[in-house]
Length: 433
Image: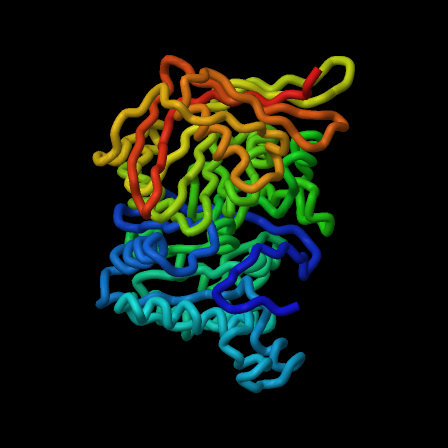
């Protein structure tokens, strides 16, 4: 089945065998390079407007130019071979999802916001474009002020943009190397949605997995054809985001459990989970002056595991964790990753001890927005603790969220809805007795 352009899904299909390796920055990036990590389903509407306008602003405004890379999509050339070249069901149908049609979708979208964009036609059918000295020279010469990475399958970005040298080490292709150089000079905006967000990770890039199975069985390095296995590439993605783990479609696909387990397994202190139609905007990325801001309709979940404690049952071996700090931020909220501090939107107001109705949460690791709803009820009620349970019962797990005297809650009305941001909710996950 082919997917419609603009409706980007994370479909993890391993196309080549072998290992994938992370390419770290050679050093601290200069002030002025920015990342826009989008949780997927960008679509249209007020939230999308805010995100597109931010990407344009960080790319130098309407005088800038954005390179669109859709290497995570099914190749246009292969689609033409499979379905012909017609504009009605063929590879040139604008409603079909392939690398060129998806690029055209974003080029048109950026044009609506007043900035020129051009497709960089690298994909897994045209890997040689990644080695193009002509494209690398255009990037080196500063023709592009930003790049946008579309959604699809993030492993295809690695296949398209990464190379192996004579010693068996993996290195940047010419195009990726040119992009990285501009980024490190402080002269680039790099944005990505869904797979294009996940691939920006510097280490331990997520490749798949369900929350319940991840919690009960743990993580396993690599890509796995069984998408319920919690998998990751130890070496990471393209290496632009250096602040922890990244995941997209976060609340909507109940990915909290899988990312807490992965972070605990691999020893990474923070998780950044970005909801749909929402962006985590990282200004001055990989520089001491870094600042993160949430832009868009929904929120960004930050889990801090730096003081978390993992417990392994002595008799049954069942995994548990506590002292995970949960922070959920909305449009206009800021986060300072180097200090771990939150600056709430100045228009939001303190909120405590409301009269929220408490629901039953009996599918906490699968139901859409399950954790988001549970914590919203917690911070908008007089309750100090709420627990959600797994639907699965072999074993049954529970997730408990608690307020402390350090918990801060703010309320604001944006995008036609009331929103509650919070900092300092504590989480524990354990098997029920």
